[in-house]
Structure formats: structure tokens, C-alpha cells
View 1 (tube, rainbow, N blue to C red):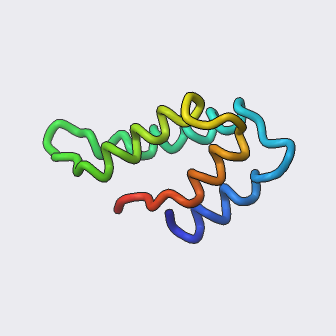
View 2 (view 1 turned 90 degrees about the vertical axis):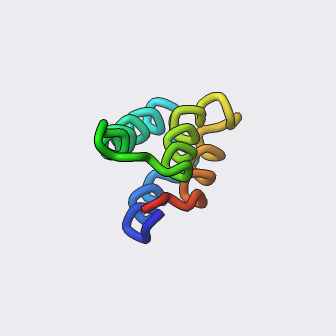
Amino acid sequence: MTTADNDFLLHFLNENTSWNLIRDIRQHELKNTDWWALKDLTMSQAKKDYRTFLRNMPESYDTPQEALTAWIEYEKPE
């Protein structure tokens, strides 16, 4: 993730972070990366893995804080 992305996500990392908030931010990020899957582009495995990570966050982590921390630590592909 870029520094700006991390700063944005860190802003929400606190005891009040909810799954609804995580899902809203995640949906926005998935929409922002939809262009990676355009018909005339070949999506790299790293980009596929990132989008899979985003979709699987609620099932992969026990708390929204754990999910957000993992997202901050995830290296977003360029």
C-alpha cells in the first residue's frame, strides 16, 4: 500500500472500527481496482491475490481491527 493509503486506513484503526466500515472501504477499493480486470488487460497474479484478500477479509479475521491491520500491512500491487 502507498503511504497515502496507509494513512487513510490508519485513520480508522481504533476500538470503534466496525465490520460495516471495513466493508464500505473495501467495496470502494474493489471498485477502484475493477479496471485491472478489463477485457483487454491481463491481471497479474499479485493483483488477483490482492482482490481475493479484500473479498475474503470478513471470513479471514476475527475482528475488524485485525482485518484492517492486515490490510495496512498488505503490499498493494501497482
